[in-house]
Every structure is written in C-alpha cells, then in structure tokens.
Length: 595
Image (cartoon, rainbow, N blue to C red; front, side, top):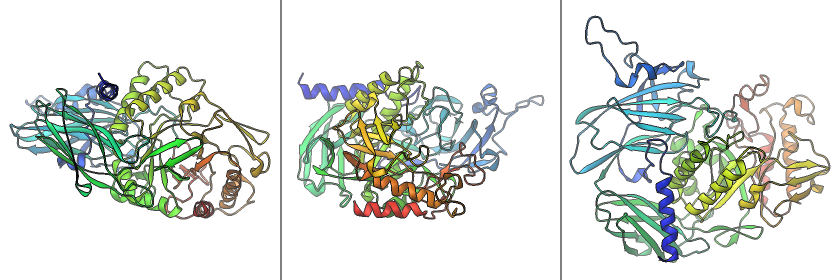
C-alpha cells in the first residue's frame, strides 16, 4: 500500500473509532446544505430539580386508563421554552438552575420508502438523553458540538414525539469540569433539524489546501449507505474545475488536484462555491483556500508573515445576558471585534456555534477553535481520555472545511502536576495532528513564573504546541516588578512564536471614583494603565506574533461576587455588557491600527 493511501486510511480509522459519544452518532457536516425540516420553536418542558423524572419514565407520556389511575407528571399545562436557546435566560425560576429539564416536541412526517431520516442537534448542554415515540435513541455528552441519530424505520407516518432529557449539572469528570469561569447556560442551545437523505449520501468531505502548498488541494470524500462504490465529481465552477474520482468499497475517495486559487485572507476573504457530487447525492459548500503555518519564530498566512490582532469572545449575547446562537448574535459580536481592529477571534473556551465560525470567515476574521479543556480536568479518570478524543473529533469534523479556522486549541490553563495531564494532552495533540495537519495546534498555559521582572515560561506541552501561548495578568493578579519595557523572558522553546493569549484587568464602565492607581476601585483609569504598560512590554517581547486581550465584552460568571462592581459579571471586557467602550478599548484600538 502506498504511503499516501496509508495516511488517509489512518484518518478514516480515527474518525470511525472516535465517532460519537455513548449511543449518539457523529453528525454529518454542512447541515445547511441538506434537505432539512427545522424543529426549532416552542418546546414544552418539565422542570426536574431533584431528578425524579427518570424513575417516573416521563418519556413514555403515560395516560390514565382507568378511574383509579393517576400519573404524577405531565408535559401538558407546563411552560414552553424556545429552542434553540438556554433555559436560564427564559424563565426567572431557572436563572441559576443547574439540573434536569425535560423537553418535548411533536412533529408530523410522511414516511418515504427510498429515504433516510436523521435527527440532528447542533448542541445540547451538557448531557442529553433522546427519545422518539417512547423509545430511547441514545445519549450524548458535551455541550458544544453536534450529534445526531438515524431514525429511519423508527419514525411513524403522521404524528411523532421527541423527548429530550437535558442535564447541565457540572461533572467532576466532565469537559469542562466543575470550576469554570463562565455562565453554565443549559438547554437545547443550538438548532434541531430533521435531515432527509437518499439511501446513499455524501456524509463527509475534507477539501483544503495541502499543508505548505498554495495551489494543491488534498482531501477526501466519504459516502454513507448501501451503494458505496460510486463515481465522485468535485466541481469549482469559478475555476472551471471538475475533478473525478471513485470511492472504494468502504465509501472513501481520496482527492488531490491543483488550481490557481485566489487565496483567502483578512483583506480579501475569498470563498468559492464547491460542489461534491456522487451518483446519488450532491452537496454544495462555500470553501476558501489559504495556508497557515509557523516557520521559525513567525506565523505565516499564505507564506507572508502576519501579526495576530486578536480578542477573546465568549458565546454570550451581552445585552440579553443569554447564550448567543443566532446569525444576528454572531454579527453583533464579530462587528465589535472588527471595529476593534482584529484579524482573529479566540472563541473561548469551547467550540462556538456555526454562525460564529462561518460569519467570521465571510468577514475576513480568522478563528481560534477551542476544546472545553479548562483547569481542574480529571485526566486520571478512566473516562476522560475517550471524552477528550470524542470532543476533538466532533469539533474538527464540523469545522475542518472552514479556511477561516486557523488554530485548534486543545487546552487552556491546565496544570502540569495533575496526574496523567501530560500524557493525555500529548496523545490528544498527536490525534489532532493526524486528523488535520493544515492548522496550528496550541495549548494555552498560565503556570509561568514572574519574579524580578522576568517571565520564566516553561511547560512540557510547549514542546507539542506551535505557539508559546501565554495567559498573563501582570498589573492585575500580579503587580509589575519593574519597568514594563525592561521585562525579561526565559522561554522553554526560545525559537517559537510567542502569543499573549490573555491579559488585562477588571473595570466597571463609568467607575472613575477613587485613586486611579489602586485596583480596589475597579476604575477605567486603572484598567487603561494596565493596557498602556502591557503594550509597552510587548515592544520588547521576543518573537511576539500576536496578542489577545481578555476580553471583548463583560460577561456573566457566578464566580464574580463583588456586589458593588461585578454583580455576577467578569468586568475585564473592553466593552461593557451594554456595548459601552471603556478607556482601555481605545488603547487596544490604536495599538492594532499601528500593527
């Protein structure tokens, strides 16, 4: 077997082995191009704060049959929640709720003999058990990635009922764990669709430039069904390109072709219409082509050095204090990043919805995609390695054709002394590189030392990360120990690019009372000075390839308990939750204009 065939067969085996979580099936990609019926809208719910619904088997929707019968649950007469959407922001009694809510939706369907039907969820936070007409389809763990169930042969002509048990309780061995610093929005938080396909359909494909090339596409197509050996055509009409190949008996076809593409960049975010055609199915996509890599201590986009002008964003609509999920939400957040002067958004600390990723790509903003591997993960738990790999597979599978996605981030602020942490994350890095070598792979660390005005940047994960990504909050959690411009650096991998992935401090918008040089008063002046000092330090930071303030908007967090200044919000935003610009915003804006 040739070497290149071995490589793509390895990718195939990885996708198969790590497909899905529990009974859930790994979701097909590019749902928007399929024949779908939306199940969004009002769903009836039962709130189950002490978790008794499982014992009562509420998914069976029992009814009284005799005079002496009674049933101690009912969806009828209960509240309704909007799907997609988090339940915390929709009912006041659920504002801080972490527990179980049962969702119910009825739909009509006409069964077709030659069609298959899938029930697709964009995301459910965090655990989901899914039932169709009283039968359990399966379960899924993970709050930020898609999953699906095939319901061909299970769906009935006429009326059908879906019941979903949603549980957002924090788990010690969950991803994330129990101590994360953002709001735990629970519920069916992204789109729910019925997807109708032919008996054999295009399930998946990877169409991106080969690493290091500006004109060679290397990828594959995967069919699902009972007629797996088919002719395949990939068309890019604007390039007058038609590439023909055949799938093997497993439904896989390798792709490799050349074209003189207009390359995607922040200045010119070019996307092409790409058609993937088999004998039984056609899927259309918009795909851009670009190269991103590290050479020496530089980050190169399309073989040209680029400085990453970034900002951190949580998946929250700040004005609504709710989970962001719509195209309008994405536009609001991304337009704010664009106005700041960003060419990259770090979507923290989990994969955001597809509206964010696709809209950023169209706007010419690179995307940093991140797994929810955040502090205090129980890497020694026997279930955690499989969860890591499943979530990685689901993230990469969904977004691998989005050229705007430049970085896969596999962890944030984990601790090297945690049992099995190094082994688990090194293995995860190798798995990610096997799935997709065309993007940068990063681990973010905050366990550096800062003494005598010197950063000692060390961590074994930096040997497996293409950027030295550092979260540092000098001026806030640690005081300056000398002139910022005279800060010294002792870096474990001195020849790699350095990216300051978090920095900043808290200020409540409009807070200007009290001494401006004291953090205790949460003033805009104090926050502004942090940014002035940080930018002075950046001027002498070796191998600096980019910076990323923490963060764009103030956001909700139950950890933030100062009732004068925080009121349940992390106040490190450059913008308030109402979009008001703090003084520090102007400092970053001017810095990015100069860069």
